[in-house]
Image 1 (cartoon, one colour):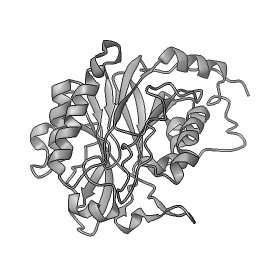
Image 2: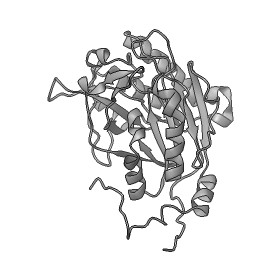
Image 3: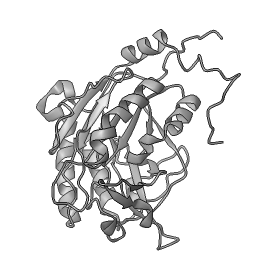
Image 4: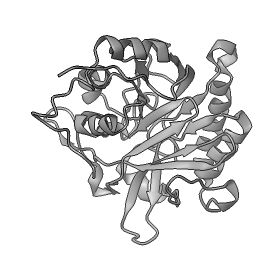
Length: 316
């Protein structure tokens, strides 16, 4: 079968800032004030004009402790975003301080924010909590929502045993965001291991330029899989891939791996600082449409799929 390259529509060069935020404490107000300060710092590129962010992403469970025991206590109401629509700041739930902070921070900085993830309370069933991401535009409007689909239920001998599903319920709707600078698929942490998720999204949306995930790997799985999973998803799908981790803090009930990074469509790590960093930091990178286009043109794997032999799974 012939393979014809198709240009990536709607993708223009943009700067990404990933905030490797310290793990949340029980004092949510303190957590949110600190996160907002770092959002403002990230938006300004840390004083470097060449790194001023067009898009910021926060880590998984950034507003409260990363522990099953904390999720129900800190869960907030998160409204659903109408298809193709948005939720104005005035219509946000009054009792959801995290949403208010993210809305205010987006307005203050004038940029788009992927608000990590937070525990979401189900208003129709008080036994359910979701691990939920929100997305914000520069006017402080909520323009996207995603509930983690694959829950972290693992039992690794000599490593870690955890059942996220003991507290968290799974989502069922994949999410793709169309920003003015490009089309971005989003997910959360353990979702990175399920290659058919991003493969299906990429098949349905050839203009996806990046796959971004707030993520909290641990000291067992992080050294084994953190970097290689991101590089594999990037190479397979010819997109930029990045995961934003909480900073590492020993002594917590759940200790995050750190090492926030972004890799390009060839699987090369292009973010700064280096992926050895574990403490609180802001990781900057630039996504380049010319580089992505060159890779897809040189090795046009999407158009070379053998659909006469196999098909990718579909969400439809």
